[in-house]
Each structure stands twice: as C-alpha cells, then as structure tokens.
Image (tube, rainbow, N blue to C red; front, side, top):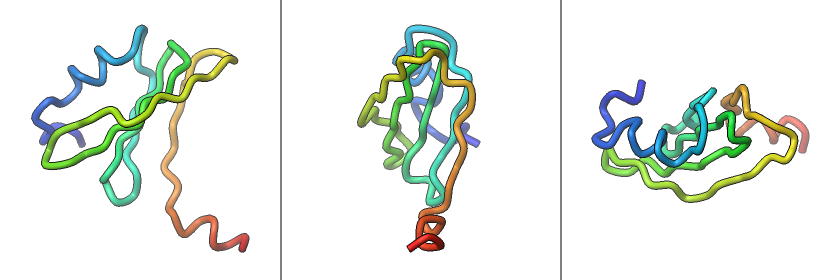
Amino acid sequence: DYSNLSNRYSDVMQAHSDWINSMETDCEKKEMYSGGKDGVVKVWKIKKKKLKCMAALSCNSGAINCLSKVDRSFGKMFA
C-alpha cells in the first residue's frame, strides 16, 4: 500500500513514458520498483514518506509486465 506516500503515484507515472504494469517494494519497504510498457524498471528510494528515483534499468526485449519481491536472505540458501 503506497497511499501514505506524500507524492504517491504522480512522480512514478510521470517518470515512465508509457503505462506502468507493475509496482513492488523490497521486503524492508525502503525501496520501491516500477516497471512498465516502456521497458524500463525504475528504482525508488522511500524516505520520510517521499519517493526519489535512484536508478533506471532499460530492457531491450519489450515491456516489463511483472516485478516480484525476493527476500535478501534468499541468496544465502545457495552460498
């Protein structure tokens, strides 16, 4: 639920050049990720109920249709 964020969805929607298909937070709710039809995943820092875009990752194979949360401890299972 992102409704408590002061700049909410408007900054996220304006940051993408096409429809947003998926949004997700990390397990600690310190970062949010948005992915869209424009083939870009944006990484957002959540701080004091505000969002700040920290990075953009481009995909050359088309739209981003789904983002999924993975716990940081997941990688430890394979170490």
